[in-house]
Length: 254
Image (tube, rainbow, N blue to C red; front, side):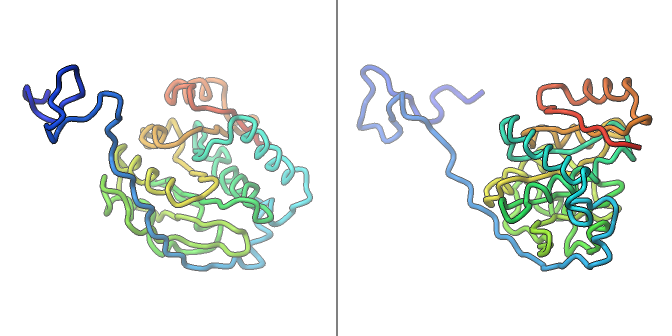
């Protein structure tokens, strides 16, 4: 609690308008606007053989029913209010969350219709950079740890030119996350001007990492695997996350 008399004085009847700390009561006091960070892009073209990766269906088989399902998911998100920052997660590992994040980001960026950033925030088993066949020029979580709560002035990321995505990749062995630093990071990234930011997160039930991320995003999309994900795991994941930001569950065939 501030000491009595400290700080600016709100406007009031009889206040001395010659007082340099006086301001009308109905004028809000706000922080100065944040400056957008700089972006350093390292160009990368997905090699032809990677287009046949069965997980990258928007690239390898764009006319397939599986590819169409991600376009449908894109429309469902639009119907859910078009959240700016979407976290993709699953109750446990191996339930297609990275597949979903990659293809959802590609669907959102399809035909250059939107500027999309894909972020790999999976500290223990990052898979986005490996799937897209690049080595991160600088690990997202290491950049985040170096910046701390002050936020980043410059983000170094990859421009996957033939997919139309910017990607913040993560390497194995990255340092732990903390909530305030994650919040500062996404506050910074929101200022860049991306239409969509898709975040591949750790599984919910494996650790508390995803809970540190959930306050920094606008929506959470769960994935589940047919005949593997249990109703109990889905209930526990929903309980751990809280239902407020969960916009739906996507079921994948085993």
